[in-house]
Length: 206
Length: 275
Image (cartoon, rainbow over all chains, first blue to last red; front, top):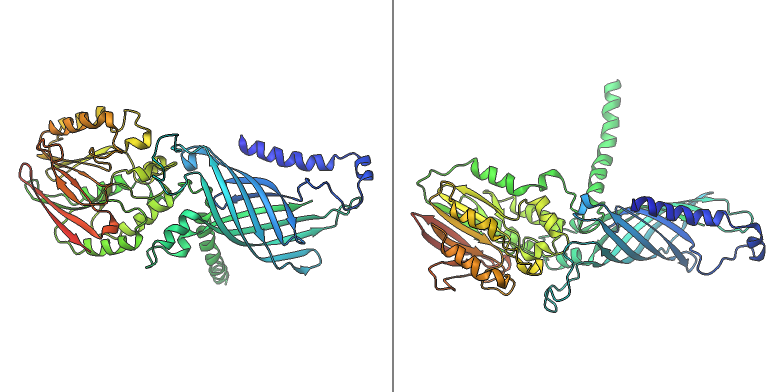
């Protein structure tokens, strides 16, 4: 149900863009956009941020710096309770390689994320523990990621010059708790490979 | 010709397929996601089956290893396994809770990946750290029941959740309505042992249930001792001065475990082993 809602939300954003009346475009200089309007939409799976996670984001510094806000969903049968995750990702991609007329490759992205999980079962009720009983938060996670992507560059929207791009991306990441575990076992008890999570996603620039 | 072609095609696909399987394993929906390969699920039942496959003669002395709190101590876990595998005549190992540190499935898998290298099966009881977040569900999926019992040789082992604080002291943990009939019926065994994570002397034990729990143990027929973890410090004593012995394990980090021998009606001997 939440997946449907999420898909609906994404579609509605697309539709709103497509259905903008002609006079709106006429009053906006070609290529300009309202500052708050997201520059891209994303939909991904994994990475610790949801079975499905969708959202929107902005790009800066000629697309080298990007930030995404995602809402993720995990069904009860995979985690013991239905989880909703709100995440913020910030990514830096120094290289954009135009490998063909309509294909761009971003070979290396490095970034970090913050996520908050709603819906866990044992969620630190007020007064349940003394201060610092557990040194870590149950629901708040920080993580790091590296990744890459391939982008298909379609012709820009004729009337506005706004870009139309579709990308597939992957990210290898880890979170604060996994990294802490690794750092506490420096004699080889835990391997780097055991800490990794994978995310696969689609990004649409508009 | 066509078979050669098929073989070539498969040798090309195989690495990709391996990558795909590894990838699926890494596609984590949330740290609370407990999807794991089948071999990492239902471990309590599987390990009891392994134990029962090597029955002990009813009159024999029983020897097992007792430890606790493996949480985040993976370097130590490897050394513990090496040491325990050199102990002669042991039947199994008991881990007195806090298998994980954050109640996450990945951690429980990491611990199992170490402890499955033991030459004997191991059994666990749930600890407070295993109940953080969605840990209760992860533990049940990976290990099994929170309260359970089994008979091996001439001894009945009852393992139960005593992590009252994780339930905000709701008056139901430990579940005395489940425990009392377990203690009353030895299921044909000669003696019994009770294992839980939080000891009744600790602040994390539900204060309303402390004395009823202690009394239930005092009245239990053939009780050799009650065993706990949580304190990260080994002790053997009778804190309630009622004739009931309480044994507390070290954590993996203390690099010491107990080799426990039980025989007769309620006889026991405990040897500490440093690794």
